[in-house]
Length: 159
Image (tube, rainbow, N blue to C red; front, side):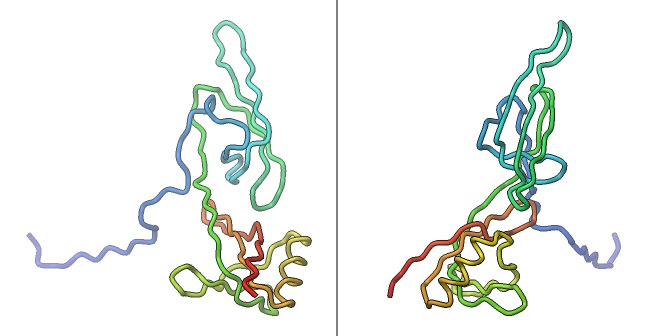
């Protein structure tokens, strides 16, 4: 036995995977799937039965939950697909900075300052307009596969 101490530097998170496997045949419309390494919401699923010895195949059409791009994939129905862990969290809006970042209040009272303003013009205009009027706004942040983006807005109006 050696007297040396071993120090391990971990560059990973707590071991939680960004995705989990699910059989392609069980994924339904409005579910989530990973297509071309992007988390997508499934908008269309069609299953084709193939010949004598072939596998039934599932054709997925999904919309990237962050960019809004349409992606397609065809997978044998008996194979596993990656399904992203999608979380939605609500934060209170504290400030919108000039450089395009927002300042949010978390449930435990800390601030979260690493999120950009939404890319959706209508949502951005609604957010800036409500903030300039002094409304209490709650933003919904969707996170999946290490990415986060503001996807919704609520006025709690305690005034």
